[in-house]
Amino acid sequence: MKVIVFVRATASSEAGLMPSEELITAMMEYNQQLIDAGIMLGGDGFHPSNKGARVVFSGKNRSVKHGPFPTNEVISGYWLWQVKSMEEAIEWVKRCPNPMPEDSEIEIRPIFTAEDFGDAMTPELREREDQMRAQVPEPDRWEKKPARTFAGISRTYSFSKRDTIPQQWIDFSPYLGKVPGQIGKDSYGICTFANIDSFDYATAVEVDGKHDLPPGFTRLELAPQHYAVFIHPGHISTIADTIGAIWQKWLPASGLQAANAPSYERYTEEYNPQTGLGGTEIWIPIQN
Image (cartoon, rainbow, N blue to C red; front, top):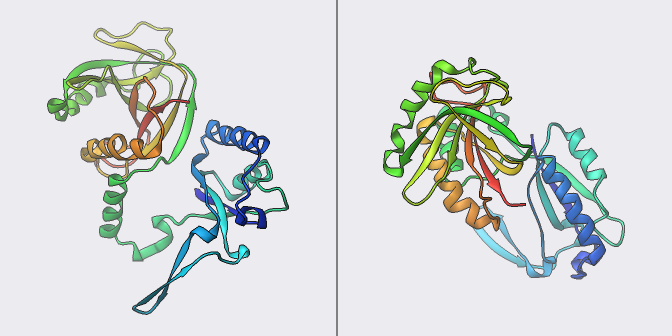
């Protein structure tokens, strides 16, 4: 589940009092723990409300109120987290350094999913939402992975020929579940050696690295790495659009830098090759 975690404003934050070096250091260490645990999706702090404004709706009329606003109505910052439960979120908040010099409060609110809207979210509306999410993607979680070994079939493509990749998956599919030393049931599409003209693409599974491989197979060694993980919500035929939006929109806007490491698609047991739906993730390597 996703939750948004609000840091409620205090007299100090509304007065524009900046945190000390000690608090900044403690908060950075805490944020790193959240990232390493794969929980933190985003977060930021806010200027005091005297620099903000509110738009008031009354029927068809709109009016504007300028800050400052009452301190008990204001938040001074937030995190966006992916957690297993509200209880897990509460435990993580308890570990947070006090974000203010005085007593303060942090509020946790679950975020709605499409399922929460019941029948009002028709299949047509759900498809439309998936399309919009693919246009402006956000990470669903962060992961820190140790060194791993993969094995599979690797081929080189120009970007104009990437629509032929499905044939590579057809050629690889007889090996799924049968590769010597295979770990788990997930399969991967790993992109390496990308440049403006071409890239290498491996259809692969994770292996223990202790067994001989079938003829024509390539072994890939991935170093320890942090990843931003995106769930591809739509049909597999549109995954290139989601990948393009991640690299062209999300990454430049995020202020982060991609690491010089392979990116990959992960297909979990929930992926249905007959329908082309479900269980599809895109993993982007991020510099620490």
